[in-house]
Image (cartoon, rainbow, N blue to C red; front, side, top):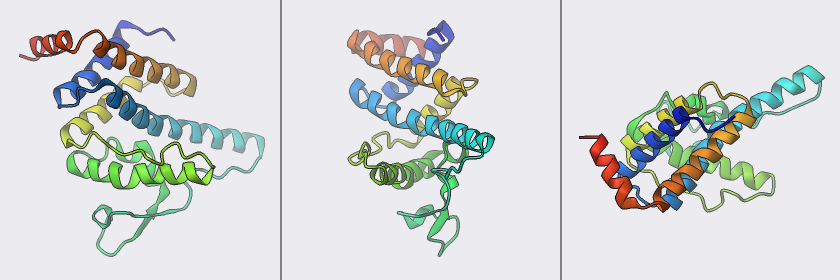
Length: 191
């Protein structure tokens, strides 16, 4: 799947949301996009593994099976509830269903720790020090929605991976070319 002009526009839109929202550091943005796209992709991979297990008659336990103990009581669906189904950690459950401060709180306090716990359980502490840096509610909402739209139709993990690599590479390369030019282009397009 080549990096098409349409995909480039979608990547530029995500980059503009980040840069215009006060997140000018390309390395931090690449890291944050990596985490967010990982959350998106792992859902598709888990679903594909589940389908394959059913087709071959093998046992498979979804990463999203069972209950999750909430880290922040403000994320509870009702007062006094301490556990929610792990299914709520799926990208499709929160990326378009939540917005604003509720989205920031959920991703920061529940999604990041959930995946850190999964990494620890498998002996890979890839998210041990990970944290959500995009804490501006509007920006996180825009990035999640734009990411969903940009990856729409790319449900096969191979295509998702290519898109994610292209998105992160373009994000880094865009700022390496000069943030002054990017700033000028951003403001000229958004007047």
